[in-house]
Image (cartoon, rainbow, N blue to C red; front, side, top):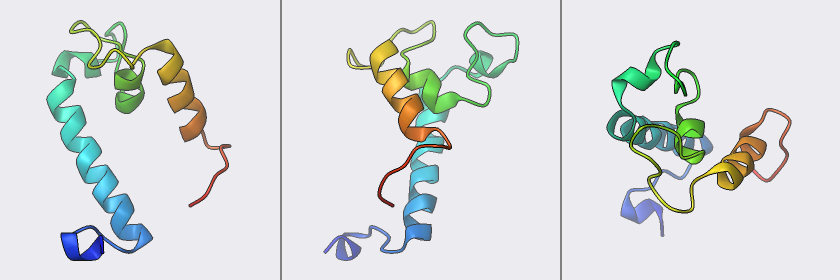
Length: 85
C-alpha cells in the first residue's frame, strides 16, 4: 500500500528518503551561522540533535522539543541503541 503512494519499500530506499527529508529540514530550520564550530550552541555535525534539543536563537520549533525530547533522541540514535530495523 505504501509503495503505491510513492514510499520506498526497501531499507535502502527508506534510509535514502530519511536523509533527503532530514537534509531539507536542516536547511530550512537552522540558520547557516549555527553550523560554525564557534557558534554557541553549534549545529555542526549534530543538526538533528540541535533541533531535537530546541537549541538556537529562534527558540523551539515545537513546545515538545527541549532537553527531555533531545535526550530521548540522543539515546535512540546513539550507536549502541538497539531496536527493530
